[in-house]
Amino acid sequence: MTDLIRKGAGQPLRDAMRRRGLTQAALAAKTKGVDASGRGVSLGTIIKITGRGKYGADRCRERTARLIAAALGEPVNDHFLTPSVSTDTVER
Image (spheres, rainbow, N blue to C red):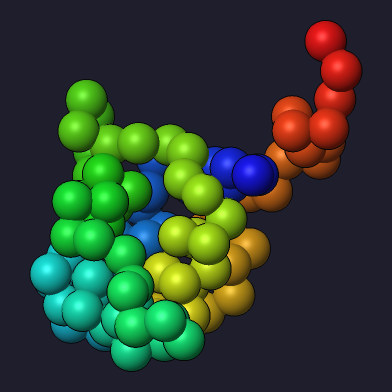
């Protein structure tokens, strides 16, 4: 599983939420609407991905990043960096 890295310590995500008038809870709810399984992204995960400082998480699963971006109506690459090499397939 590939992890994506949020850009700008989550500031682009927070800016997009502000432009759309979305709270963290509203964004979590919106991810359920764009998820074919209806599960979406939990509020706890949204708080981590959009959080600042010690409460913020820089990495998330690709599925999480795609659902958040879809709920915001923006490309994944606007908010997350994709590692150039997957650590899942690299031998150590």
